[in-house]
Amino acid sequence: MWSMIGQPKAIALFEHGLNAANLAHAYLLVGPSHIGKTTLALDLARAVNCQSNKPPCGECQSCQRITDGKHADVTVISLNSNRGRETKLRAEISIDDIRDLQHSVSLPPYEGKYKVFIIDGAESLSIEAANCLLKTLEEPTSSVIIILLVSEELRLLPTVASRCQRIELKPVSVDDVEEALAKVYRLDDDKAKLLARLSQGCIGWAVTAVHDDSYLEQQAKHLSRVMSLLNKSWGERFVYAGQLRNDRKAAEEVINLWLLWWRDVMLTKCDCKQDVTNVDQISMLEKWAQVLSLQEIKRFISNLQESLAQISRNANIRLVFEILMLDMPKKEYKDGDGIPSVSTIL
Ligand SMILES: [Zn+2]
Figure 1 (cartoon, rainbow, N blue to C red):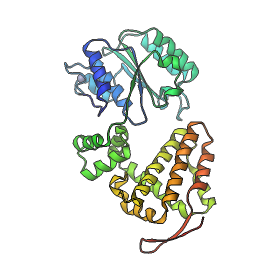
Figure 2: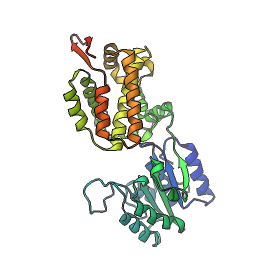
Figure 3: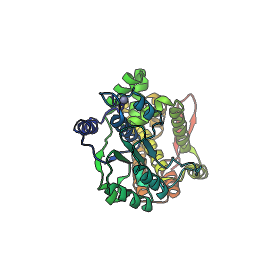
Figure 4: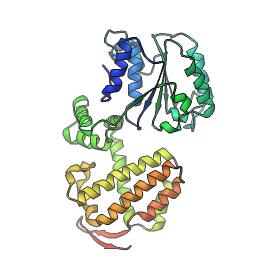
C-alpha cells in the first residue's frame, strides 16, 4: 500500500511503470515543501524492492527496512546528510556526495532488486556536484533509480532536469487532508480541521504536526509575539526582526505564516469566520479584527505579499523584515476585560 496521501496521478504513473517493467532511470519530483515528495520517493523505493506481489506492501522485510532507514540499497542525500564529517547544516550538496553515489552506482544492489538514490533538495547541489551527477544521468544503469526532489525548480541545472522524468506534486484539497487525518491518524474533528487548514494542502506538514505537539504551540507563541508588536516601539520591533533567521526558506515560512493569520483577521473583520484557518484562535482573531481597520489589514497583507516577492528576488532578508516592522500598523491598546480600547498612533 502506498503511504502517500493524495497525488493519484503520480502513483498511477509509478504503478504503470512497475506493471510494465518500464520505470524511468531518473525522476524529478517537483512541489512545495511538505507536499510529500520524500514520502512518495520512499514509496517508490519500497515498491521496486518489495518482496510481496502487491508492492509496496509496507510489511515485508524489505519494505520495513526501507521504512526504518536501514536498507543498504536505498540512500537519501540531503543538506542534512553530513556523511559523518560535518556537524552543521550545509549550504550545498557537495561533489563528494555525488562521487560516493557514482561509486555505489557502479556496484550491484546489495540486498534488494534496485538501488535507489533520493536527492532531497536537489536545487542545493553545487555546480560541480550537478555536473558530476549529469554524467551518471547520461549513462543510465539498469537496477538503479535516481529520484531528485525539488521545491525550487528554477535553481536546478536545466541539463540535469532534462534527463529526468518530471512529476509535479500539487497541494491536495484541504477537505482531503482533513478526511485523511481523521481516518488514518484518528484525530478528532476539530484538530483534523485545524491541521488540514494550516497545512494548506501540504499533507507532510499536517503529519509532522500530528506527531509533534510542540509544532502548533510554537506557532501559536510566534503569532502571539508578532501581534504583540502592534503596540511596541520601533526599537523593539527591530530587535524582533534581528532575531529572525537570515535564511530565505525560513523567512518565506515566517511570512506565509503571518499571511495566513492576517487573512484570518481580514475574514473575521468581514464576518466570514467560517473560512478562517486558525479555527482554534477565534477569540484572538476577534480581538485583532476589532483593533485594526479593514484598510490597515488590506495594506499589510499587500506588504507581506510584496516582501515574499522581494525575498524570491534575493533581497536582503533582514532589511525586508525591518521594512515590514515599519509597515505593520502601530496601535495603542489596553487589555481591560479582554476587550481592547484602541487609539491609533499613526
Ligand atoms: Zn513489501
